[in-house]
Image (cartoon, rainbow, N blue to C red; front, side, top):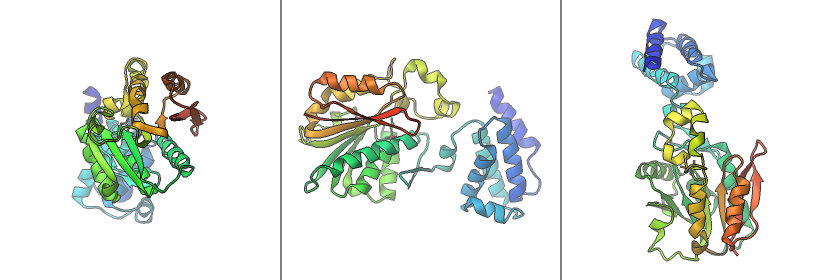
Length: 307
Ligand code: GLN
């Protein structure tokens, strides 16, 4: 609380009298700097251009433009949030994923760049399978809908069952599916892992199971960045004492849903790839898993074909 009070006091102190773009940015940068935000000037500019519905470059072109009082007040509130460490994406309600713009808020995990590798790996793998039939994909833990929606966009004959236990997350995913015009290719289902699939007669018919499940160990939660720890949904991040609980639960019945030759693709946390690969091998009905590294050379994706 006292940290929040400090922020509020600081905000009031130096707030400019004349609301020019340059005055506002100068003020916001100093507030964010004092709150130890990594990129204070960049964040100050992104937030202002978001509020003004303009490009960042326009802020440089018109530094002396005076904005309306309501804009200045909205900006002040938004900078206060950022100083409290609310992630930038929850303030602007945007994140880009696979070059597509997604609406995000506190109800969903902010899509990460690494997850693009998961989507790309699924697309690549499907290129080597016959495309003359409908491709049935099950996405577990749909969140903002980033995986389901980008796959729906890029795979012409896909039919996607997008499952999440959080009705709130599904609302966000729906907004994004509508925005990207793929509502007709995705069936959103609320429930625990495969449970909501029951009744669709998909046993042994699924081509792909894809998931970026929660994989942080409860013991490691405290080392996450403050923005993540305090504002992103806990249940989308954390999965039991060792972080592997969701992988075990997803793998337990995966073979019963997948068709022979179908595959499972999952994102994993740092140092989890070998363990998840072992869990897959232990099932006894999958090919030797393939591991794919991320941009930091960390094994991040595990893929395996059902025998
Ligand atoms: N599919 C979403 C993402 O990759 C949500 C994942 C999750 O909630 N664990 O961002």
